[in-house]
Amino acid sequence: MDISNSDVSVKINFQSETATVPTGYIADMGLGYDRDRGYGWITTARNNTLPYDMSEFGRDRHNSARYQQSLDTLLLIQPVVAWEYDLPNSDYWVTVAAGDSVFAGGKR
Image (cartoon, rainbow, N blue to C red):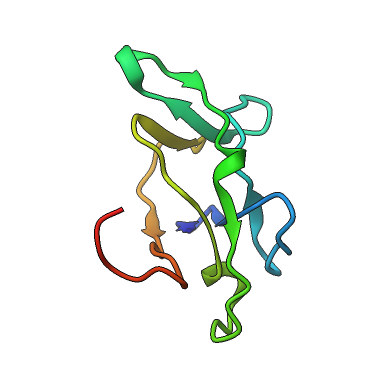
């Protein structure tokens, strides 16, 4: 995920704890939201916004056909969770690559 405007440029890689972090990216390994870190996962169940640990759902597919590590890693998104990143109020460009380099298409 890329987040940017004229003042901010951040690249986040959603990945397992053991995956190599791509150059220029910050690793998100599924940890619950932490105010000091400024980002992480929360549960949205029953109108809560409590930190939610998703680290067990990180994957590094080791797909040799993938030329970019950032496209070969992922977190398996769970129901009733959301991801937050603290930013100043402004307009931002957000680019997201979503999918799984091994399991394409179909219901999961």
